Image 1 (cartoon, rainbow, N blue to C red):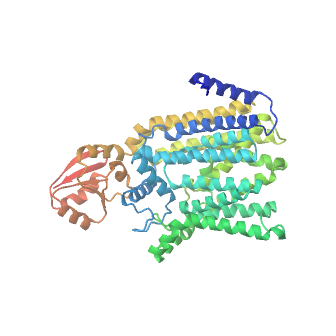
Image 2: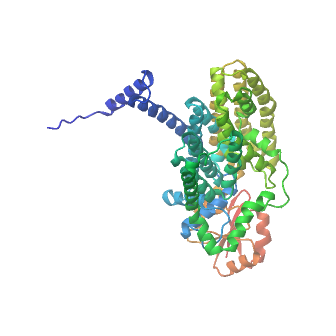
Image 3: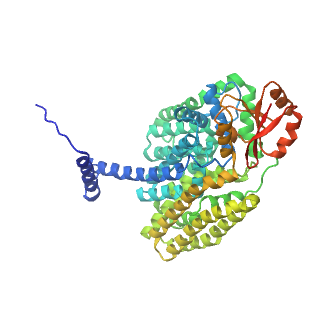
Amino acid sequence: MVRRYNFSLGEILNLFAFLYNSCLNSPMPKKTISNKIKQWFVLGQKFWILLILSAILFLFNSYNTPIIDGDSFYYISHAKKILYSGDWLNLSSLMSKPPLGLWIWALTYKLLGVSLFSTLFWHAAFSFLLIWITYRLAEEIFNSKAALFSALILLSTFQMFYMARTPMLDMSFAVILAGFYLYFYLFLKTKKESNLYLAALMLGLAFINKGLLAFVLPGISIVPFMFFTKDQLFFKKKKDYQKDAIKILLSVFIVFLAIAPWVIPQVIVHRQKFIAYFWEENITRFFHPIDGPTTKPQRDIYMYFIYLAIGFLPWSGYLLSAFMKPWKEKWQNKRRDFIYLLTWIVFPFILFSISGHWKVPRYIFPIFPALAIFLGKYWQDLLVKQGKYLKKSILWGIIISFLFSVPILLFAVAAHFMIFPEQTEVLKLFIFTFLGILFIAVFSGNILVILKKYKEAFYTFFIISFLAYFVFLAMSPNVFSKLLPEKNFCHKVMVQVPANVPIAVWDMPVRSVDFYLKRPVNHFSDFNNLRQYVKNKTFVYIVFKDEKESNKILPYLGKRYNIQVREQNLLLVRVK
């Protein structure tokens, strides 16, 4: 006879609570089942904490907050094209960008529909993955406490917040690249072949996400790392030559398998044109801009220092201290690990600085996980007051924070008003509130450091900056609807124009209208083509970016017209 037991939900929860408390509080020998349970509970707890915090920051108000960066709409339009056409291999028309991020985007649209939420959802998922990979790598290099600090630091940096809320290919690239550094480090640590093959897979995926940069960035960091540490990974012993050769060949084969679904069809179908596009996107653009108003090389190599100081707020004042402390203390018996992180940071930073292409803040984003790990370890040392160089490093951190972080915040206020002079009234409360809270985070955190309340200082930096981003998201729909009227304009257009009626868009390079209208539109920049299009229709709706532009075009179309929708400068005109 089988005896059945029925447990209530409360009893099950009590059982889990008992197990959890037992695992945390009772002394246990290593490598026991109980110890494993404890590890899983603790790891799971931190996973859920980071996931919830990430979800709040990366998805809150996502239905209402417009997309800020115009470049995002370029990728959105191509992802929608893949979805609607079914051309997943991009064979019908050549596109210079690799497709992995666009495939993920298109798949998300297929599952969740085309909306602001679905656009941000996959991006938020990758953003959380970056936080978690940072945690895992810091845990492998140092310990779980430094790992948690590293993850929270990265989560609360200004650049991470901006990148997570701005759907681009750079986030997925940073995640895959961080995955490579994690698995390659695990291979160095454990010598397990599976970690080497996973690192190779990450390289291949990074290539079909961002191109040749996927090989360049790891190459210019791993090779110097091996040089400085005198670490010979392969062919150490003659008896292992064959085995090591097989490992290398298998790794190369895995990379090939990852890139083949994109590269081979492109070469077969587009041939020389694809090669020319690939060369221009990956080689030529390193030396000068290829997609802007000028092709003159950009030599302002100092810009990335400014971008780093802004992007790593509110923590940027302590970056130099985080670098100097382990160096002054003879690497704390972690020389190899610190060099691994340093080469990940320094050489890509130099590469982007000397590049003649545009200096864009998001280009250096792949080094942010390594920076966060450096800083996470530094703050852990502060809390336990460990290290001879501690006092000097704290002093330098405070000085740099007050000398640079505060002026940078003031500069950001001035810059916003210079960029949007006509929107000063709209931006005033928004900018002063957001940057004011960020200033409070920097100021109050440093005061607590001066008072030697390091734990309170850390959580002050984190919580108040998190609050600043939350306030930013709460206020942004109202503010950006005035700065970027496309979303409200398109909503009115959809109410006014039946779904089966064609809409033309005149000379608007940023394709935000396509996205918000949720229907195919016809873009025109040549007047003769527009006139022919109008001539063949009984009536047509045309979107203009402003009234001045419409006045240059409408009188010469030879038909009557009237304005149907007006939202700030944007116009919808019915021509019949």
